[in-house]
Image (cartoon, rainbow, N blue to C red; front, side):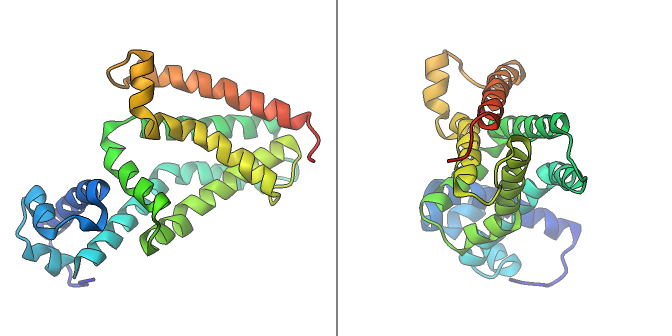
Length: 224
């Protein structure tokens, strides 16, 4: 990737190219053309080579942008989790509140149209992973997944390294992801045209109920 220092104008051009690339890669994967990306960004096609080196490097830059975006939004939750784990006996009410808070942030992000291209990019990588996914996974997804698993384990008294606990965590996350990956099905079934603040709050209330049922159920159920 080109390491030449960029001016504020150059940084703006890079961000425009990444935004356009996320949209194009989200729709077409690596079959997206640099010509279409540059056109959508309002930039000359040579700008891709200048700022990123190649289409593949631009694809990796998109993955890095996603990793940075997720980290920015969820770093406070990770810090709060680490602070809880540093205590000899983490407070269960605080653990529950943090799980609720992290899930609320995720629901909010996944019901915003602004994150749709990000979701399309990651969905493609989940089904046909490249080294771009590994970058996002290693930097933010794995740490976040691990922290949520540890929170669930600390609350319920289970082993955070046990595969069944990891499955429970992943299933919980799946409930939230369903509102993005199954977006159209849900909107049609609910008779909604889009997600707004009120509808997102309604989804959060239901997910919160499910989280509490899961936490209570696993607390009283002995690991098999």
